[in-house]
Image (cartoon, rainbow, N blue to C red; front, side):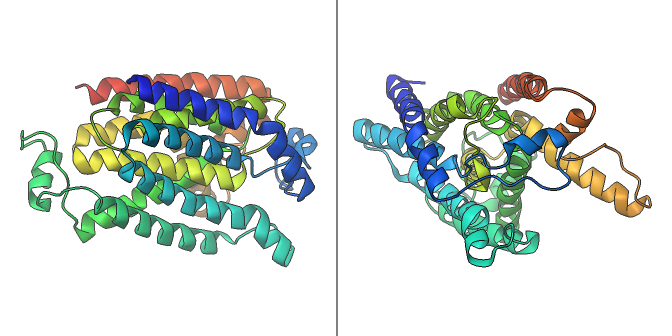
Length: 335
């Protein structure tokens, strides 16, 4: 990671940190406040009324870091494509966090409507990202995936089958990050850890500089979000982070389509994947086994809450697992 990337990281962190008090007051003033689900653990009741939509702090930090990078390097295109795609998801989160409640009085978007909007946003973002870089034939890229080609870095030509898989990839990470955002500092800290190995791609792939910028923005945000949190990121933040991870890793996969990289990115986001898999397993068990559950509650961090673990203990241990996953992913990418 070069000096410009470090400077962008620091600026992103300082901006998201320094805007904290101002943004928290504004969120309270516009009544963007947390509501707690009836089935949430009892320990969540004191969180009711805490300002939410704090993801705008992360977005502001990323914007500032991008400005520094663009000013010093004059290289914006792919980073802007990734950011713009993530902002689309942040707007869906904003609709869910605030506008639906204000317009209708309901808690938020229905899951089917949310998934439909996510799919549209992912399709548009993936399409633009795919066409922002040079391509090679899809048949040749298949050889790269299967390990029968040794021509090195290539850009995957647009193909509808691969396009569908890419959309699923992005939507999957968006929902994984969204489900992980349930405890003070959990999603923000895990995102920061996931960005560390992705910083290694800076200089190798245009657009990869987004990783240290997002890392810095998350670190600044965590100042206000660690237990006891003064602000929550809301769907505005968690969807932005999930889309950022999905699009950033997809950008690398498009230029270096290999099973090794795919496994590496799945490992780096391992805790997020564990959270969404726990929900799928729980729902499947309830439907297929006559209401029987595998976990006390899902996403899985709630399971540990009901086992009696304190919130800071869960977050710190999940961070430790996230650090191990990031390390394992980094190791696999070097194989």
